[in-house]
Image 1 (cartoon, one colour):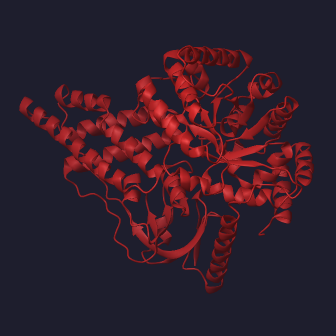
Image 2 (image 1 turned 180 degrees about the horizontal axis):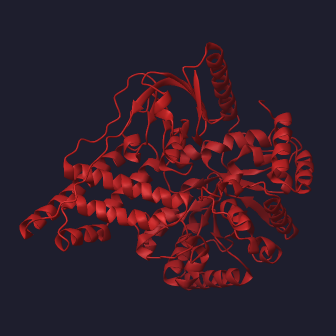
Length: 575
């Protein structure tokens, strides 16, 4: 029996046999063309290879079972068909005389080098996209056989050096139990896809192939963050008991999906879902979500350009007509820049996270912002819609945004175009300055929604994707808790609701604390709603408030985390 630890990319626990899958190395010869005619032939070969890869991606998109799969593959197709990429390769072939494989490798390596200078997990994933696309084109050019996951007709755990999105989409899912990988990260595409498939995944196991052989029995424990190879009978028995318990627990949670999230002493907490598109809305709301707490409109920019106003209006209207049956649709205006790269904007900054992004970008580009505001307002005539401005840092930005919104409303009134005259307007609290000014901001809006991902990294001066300082990114830092309390208190002081749509809202360990701090609404991914609802219905508001007061008095993150875990296990445990 052997054990080794990894990074949890998608939680869960499963037992199954290992299926080893390793990629062949690809060698690109740095050859130059010997004639003009050869350059033309190489350019034609490159163009044909791109067509073949794009067609293959179209076929995979048609097979995609989830929106996450579709989005990632569509991004890869756009990269294959990117005119700038094609132009760069063409230049290397025709002007520099490089053969097509050499030219593709050269251009892709240049892009990777550029992004490698940005120490962020999100940009590392973009590097992974580039490498996946490059690999597909090069294999087609070199007529090298593609790596294919071996066929399997019995349940297996895929043990691999890495997996591409295309490989995952093409897998047979019925007998797929989980992934264990040498490379990858918490924010990788593999993590996203494993989560969407609801299977456990561990990454970052550098010694994997030294301890696992094909057919070995494995306990994949993506709760503890370890695998156990060829476990002893008693260890295997204990793992199977835990699997049975977790299955029964999830079934119990699912049965409660129609019950409201109300504490034992009668305080209601609204649980909403975060979405990025119109697909599978009915499935998302089957979890008992009471509306959409965050609609990320950036998915409309997947083709690297802004949609027309008519296209925007149609999308927003389609979604609101479906979602309004369950609750309001909170539409976040463009949150581009930073880690959300839109090629057509050509925003290149040394420090994009602290740069020209979100509301700052929108107010400087009203020709893009105004059509979105018009589209949202027009969609509000068909159901319950809320507007939410991201990255507001102070009163001046908010007043300018509200003034622009009023101008758009006046325009629609003149043209007699219907919209909700009472449409609620809120802001995301993501910047420490906004939290500190939240009393003044609350007087001008209808609601707050805290984006904890950015608020935490800005408060602690920690890039959450920087592996060197990732240990400092802590939602339970005393400074973060003080800001959350301040925001909640100022919201209630001004009689507006305060919600949270960041990652912290989806972690059930934090639920009692957030209730105690005074949060009225928690918005999260659909998979987390049942667990968070269970916690809400298992505790009282009064004891949660006492807990929050106790934690706010502590001065060390480790003390806060230890106390919170003990408190939660003592009251909720495995119930």
